[in-house]
Image (cartoon, rainbow, N blue to C red; front, top):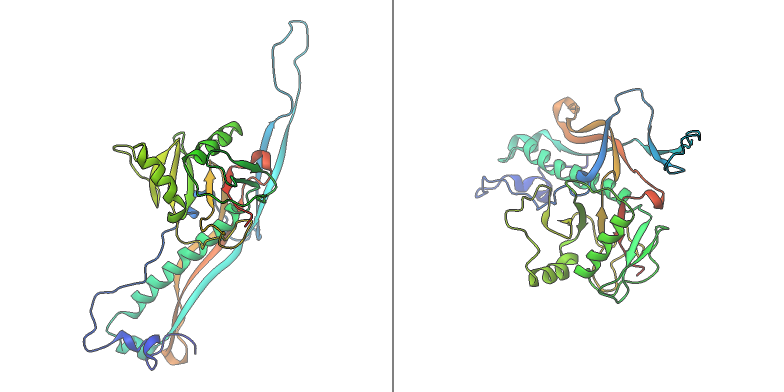
Length: 316
């Protein structure tokens, strides 16, 4: 079988050695960053089918106004659109032998549980990220450090040749407010990006001593500070270029940033992620542990006029 075995050092033999430290150590893993912003979570239960729907209610088509005493009340209507996502199975497993379990100094179950939890976190966060990257709103700046260009068809039309700075952030905040994008929490928006992509912005804001407010409480995973009503979140779980128009590492080395308000991505949960043990086979010699999740992710607003996510993007 493929998996963890005693006879191959890298696959299990290293789990016991004469001078092996008893402290468990694991490869560094990023925390969930995108999934924490999935606004809608519905327990699907069984026998509900593999497609989840939700209604999106638009504004009235004609705005109200003053009335003339002898005139009848005006009438109008509003539109209803439906969003959908598909429920999928997610999972992974690590088989291991009874011999490895019996001879290892470190507890095999505990080690595999931890490794699989990291894998589940990475996998589901990546699935959530794909929906954030489906936003139709993209902003670029070309070579300008103070202006941005907005496109609404899900594609950036110019190459960003400058790093994200405070001038861009100011323009993006204005765009979000002008488009009436509701704030995520407490009047604030959020922005998610890789640490290196925020470096120029950090330097800009340190110079004017506005970056971290005294006593500011960081409440989300990866949160590093606040400026112009935006709280900034660092993520390192999604590789550079993934989801951008360029779909590769940008020519100037920076990366996407997602600026978002409330009601961004829906997560429908049929079975929350869980660790499962394999029923032993081969008279108990064949064992294994898996993680399993039944659910899906979908962007809530696909129409540009209602979109809640702006991506700092680049064509190359």
